[in-house]
Length: 141
Image (spheres, helix red, strand yellow):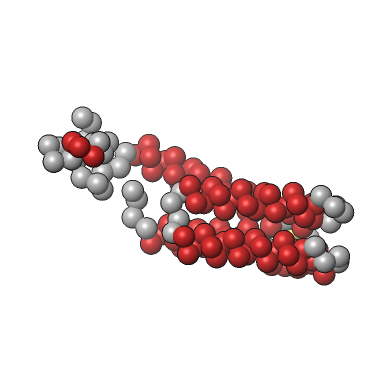
């Protein structure tokens, strides 16, 4: 068995591999997934620069579309949380991310106030910051 792969559970005793072995390609894929989530959050929350250095994102703009805008934003933000869960983030971090998304969605349904809140709160950027902190504490599995 190659040194960079973890053996099946029944083969652990007969192998010199440990549970900490990880292939370079696994790390590359994981960091690629993290970068993709960071890029999505940036697109949704801060990809547009306004005069004065203020940054807004497409989530706030999409949210201004009556009826469907908030639902589309909620879907995109929820997908980011789902992908973060697939990266193995601990449940408390996922719950906090869901709280951020839920708060933004709940306030987002209020006309005008919700749109302003969406531009200011930036739930996706907050969630990526939570993801980074959690992954920095977690050893590569």
